[in-house]
Each structure stands twice: as C-alpha cells, then as structure tokens.
Length: 346
Image 1 (cartoon, rainbow, N blue to C red):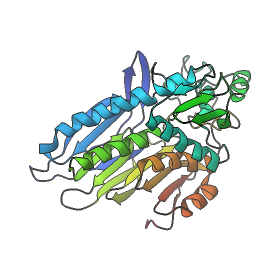
Image 2 (image 1 turned 180 degrees about the vertical axis):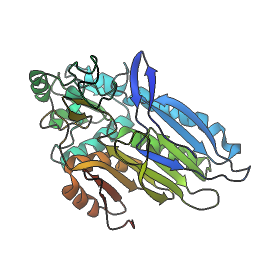
Image 3 (image 1 turned 45 degrees about the vertical axis):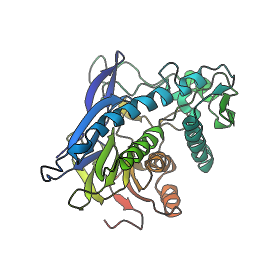
Image 4 (image 1 turned 90 degrees about the horizontal axis):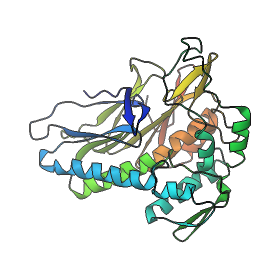
C-alpha cells in the first residue's frame, strides 16, 4: 500500500507543508514482471510520485520528472524567468509566452467567466498576503508562536483586492498583458491537472498501459491494474490527522482530484482560516463544504472543477457537475455527510 501523508519539506530555503492527505491510493501486488516501480521528486512546492507497472519502461519515470521540471519552469509564479513570473513583473507591458501558457491561461479564464469571478486567477495579489505554509494550530493560545497574528491587516487585503479582476488580463496571439501593473496571476488551481494530463499523454505514447500519476494528491490513473481490475482511491476524512478514510472509489483510466479546506489552514482566536480565498472578500471562502473530489477523464478539468465547486457550495456545485457530461463528484459537507452526483453509486 502507498499512503499519502503530511510531510515538512524545505525548498529554496522556505518550509512548505506538503499536503498529500487528500487521497489515499491502494495498490495490490502483481507478478514480478508487473511489480510497480516508482520515482518521487519535489516540484510545485509538493511531493510528486509516478508509479508504472512495467520494469521495461523504467526510463519513462525520468522523462516524467523532466516534464515536471519543464512545467515548473513555465508556470511557477515564484521562479524568476518563468512565463507567469514574467507576466507578473511586466509592469503592464505585453509579455510573449509559450503556446501552453496561452492555452492554460485561456482555460483558467473560462472558469473565471463560468463562475462570474468566484474563481479569479488574479487572486494572487491577495494570496501572497496569507501564510498557510506554517505550522497548523488548533488554537491561537497553544504557544507564544501561535499567538502571533497570521491574518493580514484589513487595509492590506483591501488594497490587494483592488487589483483582483481577471478582465485586466488581455491575450493577443502569444502575448499576455496585465493592464493593471500591480496585478498578479497564478494558475495554482489548474496547473497540476494540466501537467498530469501531459504526463499521461507521454506515458500512453510510450505504450505504458498501467500507471498512477500522483502530483501532491492530484491522482490520475493510466489504464487499470495489470490484472485489469480498477485502482482504488481512498478519500481522506477532513482534518483527520491519522489519514482515516471517509470513502473509497474504484477507477480505471480516470483522474481523481480533491480540493479541501483541510489542505492548508491555521486557527487564530479559534477561527479557521484556510487557503481557498474568496476573490470578492480576500478572506477564505465560507460555505458548507469541507471538500470536493472530481472524477473525470481530464485532470485539468478535475483540478479546476474541484476548486470551483468548493467555492460555489453544495447546491450550485452539484448543479454545475450535473450539467456536464462525463464528470462526477463527491461533496463532503461540514457535518461530514457525503453527497454524490447521480453517476456514482455510493
């Protein structure tokens, strides 16, 4: 069995709390020929693991890590020289970017439009004010360190919010312009899904028939297990530090992506603050949902929709998923009840 867990790692001299508790993947043993082989790396501020069931294809693992590095170099908002970094530091000037950056920004903008700004890729100006990478606390009185405020000043949030508007992003050919020089974008709600899809595309081109792509809890199954049985993904019970499961799903050739308020959070004065921010207020989204898992053919779609539904809430999120073909969802409400779309049998 491969269990996903919280682990502190240090990248570029900063401590990041790696949230990989969203989903737990269960793997059964196979024959010697099809025993799983894996490779793990640190990308996108998280732990990623690629597992394939064909020892003759071991070189594919290295190529997947190369792809991870390639896309970090393009999409990272913090890596100097990346397309996103260049856009954010352009001072309102047009920036030439790659075809893939154009595609992903256009896809992200479609979700901004779909939700009338409930999702906004220019939320980065606000996100940068919040620190969700520190130690999680259950109370602001746990220790002297915990008593230090981590909630940004209202005035700072208000100033950052004045630069949040996805309409300020203009695409012309292969150039991107942020008309507000103080605006800043991030593709964090969609990029890992896109990267997982590109890795799967590569593995399939190499005739890999059975694999799991795990990008920090974003899971994508390539085919099924070598015995043709489905993989089982276990969904974590929110806030359970032991990683207990709340439910499981069986999947083949499907992406399973979760978003949850329990991924990165802290308490201050006994109030929960989580990392999914409302572009209208600058504060964490307030809804009855603790988590959403999306099952879909496309991990890009699943990544975007998991956050979108968490922002929209149970009723509107359920209506959205039911309107889309080939996509299913599991919603976890704050009473720990499970709500399934019609295509899933509990």
